[in-house]
Image 1: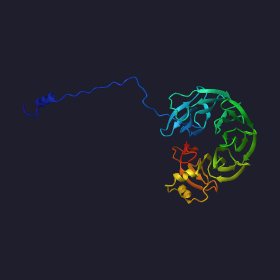
Image 2: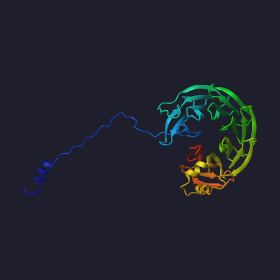
Image 3: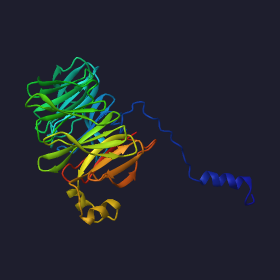
Length: 351
């Protein structure tokens, strides 16, 4: 048979190695290897400097998020009773939460150095706070008191160890949407619509009514001027930030036009910023390097213009601005300092 004929091809095929195809049957039993979980769906956020975790509301649960891994470490929830707002004390060991039922709950978190757990925290106590829903909560610097603002137009102060009311403040004509304790005094700032009130816990009286915003106030913070002395900053949807003097008499020091509706305001100490910006060539670093009339803090604002802006509280000049890194619309909703003493880091929350 001549080479290349059909017979020779059949012989070569017989000598060639045979291959087989194996079909692997997939298991019908599956387990989760990893998953993406959300950490924020709207509402309040609070940074815990003691634990290095960010408290966020997600699907009416309180989540503590680790910024380094961007993952929630633990969560607090109550089945059938969603969380509306919360506050975490300065030690990071306790959280007070407000629920749809009108109850306040105390969750024991564990604090700094506590190993993260996979299960939810359980509340250790609950109590009735107001006749209507509580929309904001805040601890004082010692963690002994927690303040609550309600839709019933009142604010209350609670002894957190005994769960009883020590003060009940009335006078606002609208929902008390924000409550903040003075960092170094037994005083409470409350907000309803465009009005601020300053209450003294020692005398149980209102010592200041601050009315200079033309629209609702969305954010409050304190800027430290010297040891034990603070100024109050209020940002509103009237496109201004007001700087208030709280020592002796409550007076407005200045109004800073921002040309956008303010959603969040924070104060950063300039002493820490000078060290952080020493090797930078940006506008803020150039301003700090001049060393002339440097205020003890600068103001950071975010709003609906999708810009983070830094302001001089003395003359109201915008020192620099940065475009929003947030996707979609890019709108900011909150800004908070992650380094209260150094002012080297901030966190922004956007849509």
